[in-house]
Amino acid sequence: MSFNVSALSAYVDANGKEIMRKVVLGGSTAKLVTVMPGIKTTKNLNLMSNTVYIQQGGSCGLVDSGSTILSTRAVSVCDCGILQPLCLDTLEDYYTQVQMKAGSYNEELPFEAIYVEDFVARVGQENDKLIWQGKEGASGNLGACNGLLHKFSGTSDSATTVTVTTVTGFTVSNAISAINTVVNNIPADAWAENDMTIFMSIPYFLIYQQALVAANYVHYNPGQVPVFEQVVPGVNAKVVATIGLNNTTKIIATPANNIVIGVDMIEDSEKMDIWYSKDDQKVKTLMKYKQGVTVKYPEFVVECTIQ
Image (cartoon, rainbow, N blue to C red; front, side, top):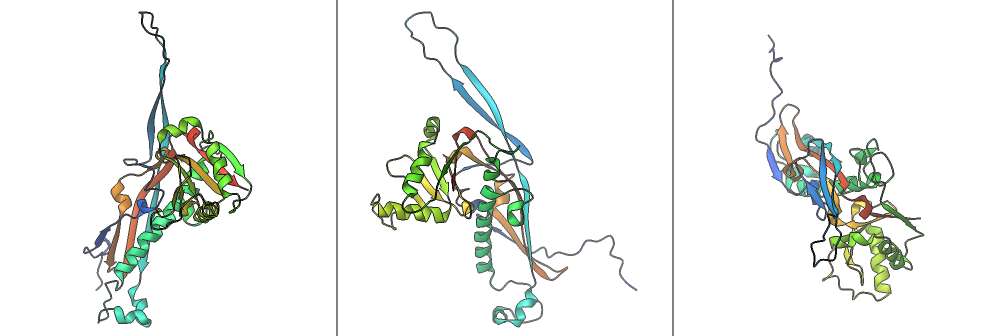
């Protein structure tokens, strides 16, 4: 006689391990910009600006003037998820067997701490790329959701009022002048935000650092300089390297708070679950979160392409 199990679900070990870490929001970009929770699908950013007219006083002749402009900008999120199964039996044939517990029931990942540390770092890196380079329908990880560069590209889902400029080459000999070109294209009103940030790839950042040292613009002291951040000499702005712009020819300048990352619950973006599943005898790692990006004011963005 066989068991009739049609009314049951496959058993999953309830003794899972929930590890709270800065996973998705741990990338360099997410640490600097605005993170907006509470978005299931799409949510409007409610924006307001005032136009004021100062009149000469001293009399009862003041007239009505000025206006308050209310506008919205939508931020839509995508459903993102990672499920990684690990068959621990595979480890028995290699050097990893010495780290495993005795017996044939392999239910514990022997190097879990190292695995989690590396997994968290990799997810943060890949998500930083998604924030900038994502495009729905693209291959690999970048296809999960549209990123900022896609929104600057003039598509229907874009911010078409960004300032666009170009620079020919980015080398030690011209990097300083290239960044000055970016700075000079930033709209005057954008400087009022006091957090002007110039985002670039790590290779471009290293070239810029070398150019500053070669020009003797800075006293090079690695112990006092924040990792992958550099103040632009003489300018109230900083240059930040992000892995999210690696393998691109883009340099983006905007107030950091102008960039918005939308999520559902911040807690969803900070945790990963690891558990042993007895139904298929595998250790599984799961992450699920929602994410989307936009900018509040496209007119405060400069997009520079290195030709």
